[in-house]
Length: 460
Image 1: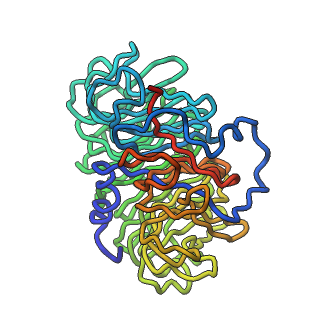
Image 2: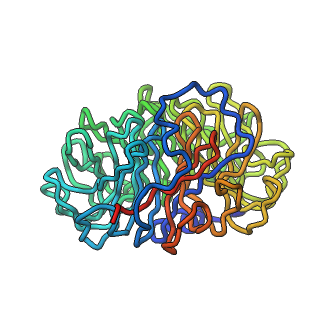
Image 3: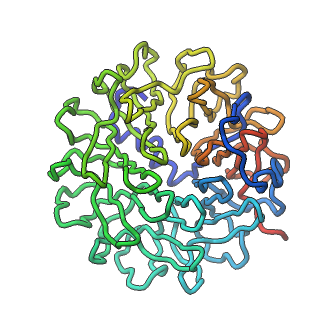
């Protein structure tokens, strides 16, 4: 992806995954050092590397989201045999408990009835209690009459579903939804919509919003610090929220700060507490990127932001002409390139769609490059993890025996400590018995170097 319009980038890598399931492959990393991570509870060693007991699904599963410590994984599936009574002939969102091996459907009403509408996206809180999701259903909550895709949150403890994409006064959205992110504590939900959910939104374009579930207040993210309109809005603003909801990173083509004069799509971070906005897609010397920067993700405490960029001037020596992955340290104001090979070489193809562990140490990203690690000969998109402390890189989407995936893998999410990665893959050789001929969701344990199939049907 070279200096093309951001809309093309969204079409290629964003819109496509709404129609064609996208979930990220996360398989092992050879040589990944996890010694810095503290010992965790015994549940992490249960059934490591074993496929869940059950039947292959009769549909495709995609868009995984992993809880903070990796015990719970939410995902979307159009399979009808994941739970009993799934007769709505629609995609649904599910959550699997990797300890108990149980699976539950999420997009149900507070009375427990299944809904009648397609699901596009989901995001899970750190403790697995709250799952946010988008749905076109009109029967999940009373009074849903807008005939639009909305954002909902399911409280699994209380068994309650509520709509999120409304104004502070409860006004329904008049537009659809793109992108979704729930904070680790489950209190804040960020999303994109063209609807005017605050009075000052008059630009008629997609804007990022954040909903405080406790105070029931909805704020717009995509406005300059002084409050003026963002008139450079572009499709797919990619809001991502920090663990406590204080920091929200997003993309805009507008000059939201005085030093943004490049006329390109840039990555920003908003401090909700202070009401400030900072430009993120800068070099370590403060130089603006000379091309678009997109797809940001922020770590738990809001210090690190990873993103993809076509810019060639964010770090010295960027001469490959490809999209690369970068990490910005907002405290030290430094930028480093993540998508480099073990030998420090530039990738020979695009690298994008990064995610960062909650602790900020590990970055997982998708790459089409064949020179990131030795022996990459499958000709498919692969997932890689970089340990920023040891400066090492390893491939993730491998079988337990180290076999390369025989089909594309993408859409990864990583646990807070960097041990587990959930991902989508169309490969049939990552685990034994994957015979359903459809894309599935997997979880890779990066310490044990094992891969587990998550999207497996109920017994019988």
